[in-house]
Length: 286
Image 1 (cartoon, rainbow, N blue to C red):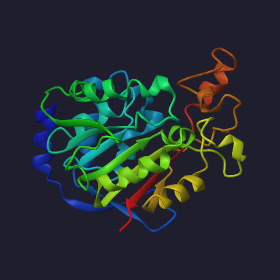
Image 2: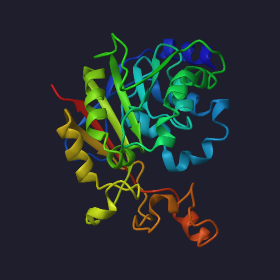
Image 3: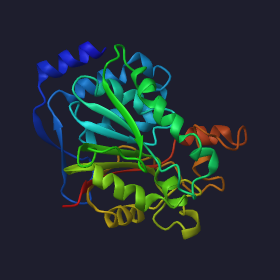
Image 4: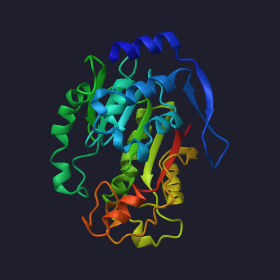
């Protein structure tokens, strides 16, 4: 797989060309490359993703990474990789000329529940090995560190940082501002931040969008991220789900894959599918 990806990227070349988002609030475009679609298709078909691909219809990894302008020669930070769903997509995609870095949250932040904080050092240590396991041939550039222990020489070296369905946790744990500001220092001057997040209705009450239900209002997220040193570029509706009413007592976990209510109304929630999600792109402010 890795050799095939390298061969394809070499033969196609990484030729920059503008690609416009499906839906944008401002006239905006990202930079993609000729042939990146084929490389993303290959990454999506990686054997390591055999248990992941069933969720592609909800998470749209090819379209999402295309919108974020992620090229296979970039240095990409994946924030809070968790179970590795996106890691197994990014690792083979970046295996040829790029670099994947797992970015873990500040394990010393007191607002983070202990059960999450205590595992961070071990996750940082294991991330390169776990990511390498997503490759048919090991040897890709993979690293990891937590944002409270950024190694020397990392500032200003990242092309993209991706925050996938984690903004609600960052907000409720009280670490969103500090983490985003650190991400801004890691990005190159033209670097970008991609965010996918469960989307509340625009008129959702404040006590429903404090992060505890998993949903946030899109306008709030845009305003907040801009305040931390980013300029809003645009948004895509690729991860939208109009069936999601986003008003469940148990929050986003009511829906698949969590199905917090177990068998109660299971068919109803499965028919809705995974949550409605905003897909936002920001550029590091100059």
